[in-house]
Structures are given as structure tokens and as C-alpha cells.
Amino acid sequence: MKLNRRLFAKAAVAVAVSGAVAASLMTTAFAGVNLTGAGSTWVYPLVVKWSTAYEKQTGIQVNYQGIGSGGGIAQIKAGTVAFGASDMPLKPEDLEKAGLIQFPTAVAGEDLVMNLPGVKPGELILSGPVVADIFLGKIKKWNDPALEKLNPGVKLPDMAITVVHRSDGSGTTFTFADYLSKVSPEWKEKVGANTSLNWPVGVGGKGNEGVAAYVQRIPGSIGYVEYAYILENKMNYARMINRDGKVVSPSLKGFQDAAAHVDFNKAQDFYVILTDHTGPDTWPISGCTWQILSKKAPKATNEEVTKFFLWGFENGQKMAESIAFGPLPPTTVNTIKAYWKKNLGI
Image (cartoon, rainbow, N blue to C red):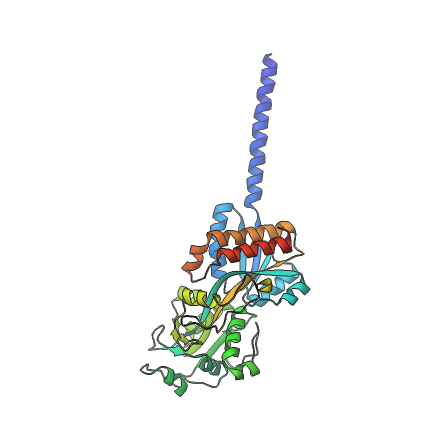
């Protein structure tokens, strides 16, 4: 009887130990889940905020590289990342051909930043046609009559303008160039809108951070960056004249007003463009970032990616708003979930 009790006690200990080991292994495996993504530098600040909080809550790491939208599209097509991110939406026919899907992440905007001695942040006013002429190389000095006309009372220096643009394939570039194509026939004809352009003038920086760094270093320079980088680096920025002829500052409200003119829920594969919409408060260079997944990827991978972004949609709103990213409304999130189920079976 005593022997049986001893055996029972040993068996109980063995079960307890094996259970603890199994639980430990499960916890370790869960904590070891590692997702990789790459692409848009525009959305980089938001993905980093979400991924840091997500790892603390779940133990799952989401490693994201801001290499530009063009690089993100190339890597998801090649299957080297779990998700790609682009600020230029892919057309439905291109998605179908490549076996991809896309869905929006958040609404945001970009603005012109300058290194302009004597001019305070938000003091300079620009219009779309004038910005196009600067980036075409037609307006070469800060005290050009076209700039002085927009800025009476502002002492603009007699200084050469250095244009700073993206050197990498960039959805930020697409959004900026798409806007200029709508307000300048000459820009549309000579340059057009794409992630990579044949720039008429200027120097190139890699990523939003590269453009921001160049502008901060070069007196007289002007470039375009996503608004979170302006806030982060406390940069000198311009106000813009929007389609309704109103002078507006970049703001979350202005980005959301632009988004109110499109219907993500009805657009095929969420293909919408947010630039140059009407409305007194609408910011003219508004945009969105799309996450791109491959239908060819393992189902488990796509499940983990969609869990992460669903967590962001449902729990990361305040984090998004803190850096001027507009969260998606619940109706759009529900549409995205239905889209996942239809296309990925999850």
C-alpha cells in the first residue's frame, strides 16, 4: 500500500513537472512568434507604436522596416515579408494578377517643410501651382514674386531654393505627385504621379526621415514629409491653400475631412485617393497607408498579421491620434474583416 502511494506521489510529481514544462514551452513558443513587415516610411511611426504595445500585451514581435512603399510592394510580391505597406494603393487588377490583397491602415497627410531663416512655422503660405513650379525648378528663389504675392508682410529672404525629394520608391512621393498633377497641368504632363519620378531638380533623401534630415541641414531647402515627422522633429512647415481657396494648416481634422469624401466600404479592394478634395477645412495633401498581404502565404502567417492589425484598429486609436493618424471608423473595420474572410478564409 505504501509502495502504491509512493508510486502515485511520484506519478503526480511527474505529471505536474511535465505540465509545467509543456506550459513553459507553449509560453516560449508564443513569445517567440515573429512577424516581419516592410515598406512605407509614412506609416512607420504608427506601426512602431502599435508593435511595441502589442508585444508587451501578447509577447508577439512585429518587426517593421521603413524602406519605402516600392520596396514593401517588391518584398511582399517576393514573399520575403509577412506584410508590405504602401501609401499608393495598388489597382484591383494588379492585385489580382499578383495574388495580393490590400486594406487601409489609417488616414494621415503630408506637408511641405522648409529651412527658411526668419520665417516661423506655419507662417509661410503656399498654393499647389506654386509648389509645382518650385519642384519643376521654375521658381528658384524664396523672394520670387509668386511667393511674395502669397505672403504679403512676410520677409522672404533673397536665397536660392534647394528642392529635396525622395530618392527611393515612395508612396509619399505618389501622394505628393498625385496632388501636383491635379493642380498643375504642366506637372501632370512633364512629371506625372508614381512612387518613383524623374525629378526635374533637387537632391534625394531616403525615406521621410532622409528628406527631413536634408531639409534640417540645408539652408533655403524645401521638401515634403508625412506630418508625424514634422511633429517629431519640430520642423518649419507651410500652410496651404486648399481646393476651396481656404488657407489651412495640416491637422488630423483636415486629413479626416479629406477621407470623408471617399467610401472605403464601397471601393473595390479599398482603392481610393484622398488628395485635393473639397471642403473648407480639408487638407489638400491627405492620404492613407495600405497593408498588402499575399494569398500565397501560409494561412497561419496571414492570421497573425490580421490579428495584429485588428488589435491596432480596436486598441490603438489613441496612439494613432497622438501622432496625427486618423483611425478607421468601425464600419470600415467590419468591411476589412469581411474582406479578409472572403479572400483569405480567416
